[in-house]
Length: 216
Image 1: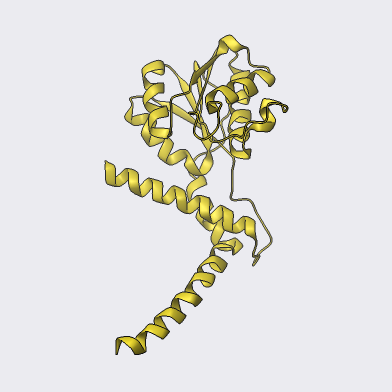
Image 2: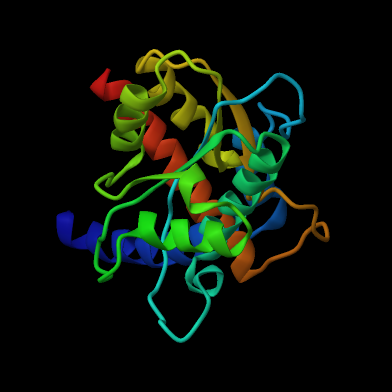
């Protein structure tokens, strides 16, 4: 009986894999997954004074012959640009950037610092956390620095819910400044590799939220 079922099971798995990838590359699916994460927070607008602008790290690849902004990943650059935008409305604030060394010889926080300086932020207005390996550590390090001071948290829109929760657990009352939006309008009924990438990032975030809930 088991031998009879084995070919059917194998065939089912062979069909399910490509079908799953095709589904995730379908624009209504990828956009829906991303929009469910990104629709909770509006873009930051100038208002109350800010003392700290907290920019979460992402990734970079060292190419010493290039400017620092060209060494950042697209996500890291989007986050930094939004952080600099917020800082320009509050030039007395401290821009906080973070990220550990990882597989690259230079800590990500240092690359973010250099890029921020290229974008016009004075060195004395930048604080780095080069030891932070993930959002949880970024939140813990920032909590000791920021305390109850007014702060803006900058990260990808899809990541904002989980990041806010981690920062609030450290006793900080941060204002969200989402950026790097993925749920962009596309042609309806459209399949693409980008849609698959959007779905992958969204599913990664859902798993992160689930893991955070399990740990709590």
